[in-house]
Length: 233
Ligand code: DX5
Ligand code: ZN
Picture (tube, helix red, strand yellow):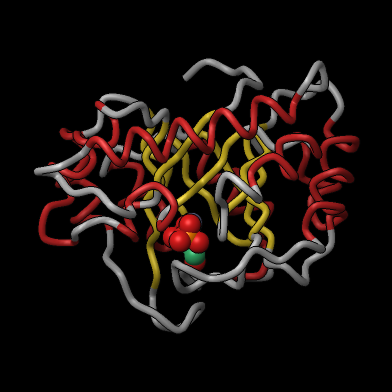
């Protein structure tokens, strides 16, 4: 996985057809997705349950690019090796998921994956200050994690701005997750985000049988974000 700050669109399969994950991943990649975002929920850290490492392993062969696994589970540490074995390229653990996030991040890198830290909307930017050398990605939650289709929380724009200044030249992605549309994506691209997760806004109107809307939706988000970037990266 190489590093750059170009805009990357990461469809969340939370909004895909759960009975057809493999075909859905192939369809959104064919329509221009850069990464595939995989939301793992445990019904404990967040009030919803999705799926675990077995599902990740099953969809891995259907993903050509980056498999970006967002763990909304607590504890996370006992399961990290299973998600690495399932083929995750990026494993993101929530800062709020336990008392030892530094250890979790070290463990993720030790398993050969890129390490991400996710911040809930109420968690300040400075939660990452002392793990900057342990991370490859910061996921700024722009909704409360647990469900797709929620409204973007505007206070997170300032958090992304602070994080972008804090990371300086370090090769750390800033990912935003929740309520991303062609209207909200530019606000975050301008503030410094480069990985844009979108579930509802990518999958709406399309299907495996009729995937063209996926491509239109991805292009609309990307164009809006790139236009807002200007010369700022
Ligand atoms: C929320 C998940 C998101 C979610 C985004 O807990 O982490 O990835 O699927 O969905 P939309 O884009 O519909 O807000
Ligand atoms: Zn997510």
